[in-house]
Amino acid sequence: MRDLSVAVFRPDDERLTDAVELIDSLGATPIPDPMLSVEPTGAAPREDADYVVLTSKTGAELVSEAGWDPGGATVCAIGPKTADAAREAGYEVDTVPDEYTSSGLVATLEDEVDGARVEVARSDHGSAVLLEGLEAAGAYVHETILYRLVRPEGSGESAELAADGELDAACFTSSLTVEHFLEVAADRGVREAATAGLEDAVVGVIGEPTLETAVEHGIDVDVVASEATFDALACETVEAAAPTYHE
Image (tube, rainbow, N blue to C red):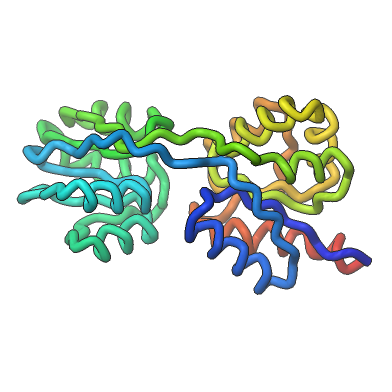
């Protein structure tokens, strides 16, 4: 019986290290295959907003490095990891939604942002749900692109394993990780085989947008994480794959 192999697609920094450690602690074999690389733009959020929304740990770190001062703005983080990173950078976080998604943040803020200036600081692949939802609530929304997300060179080991039927599970953390997985599979000439290989694996996704992207590209999804965190995604995906592993 071979080990339960689980592909993780986190950026190649402490997030990938933490993901590998978590998968290993669950008794499975992590397949680290970064599908995202961060390219900072050098931009910083406006400093005259009433609300500022940070949507990632990377964003919180970049605004700190830029010396950004929120002034009297209400600082909102999309989830606990982002909030922790912002606090570590010295910012006071005022709002974290109960549901760690764009729609969850909109639901938290929609009754208080009518007429307010809202600054959204994030990557170039942020969901339109956040901007459109805040605008629908009456906010004046400005978006600052802090960084671009690109596919790193050398990625694709997981696609080869899936194509060979040797991948037991995969944890997709965003729509872009799905798209980059399929792109690198195509570059290696194994897209059809890799997609077929995922049918025999347990595929976990971090939320509804990622689910929709996977389904649109013909990937069968087995697990949608109960909350939008990697810890929940990894634990629930490995748990779903474990019965096959232990047979």
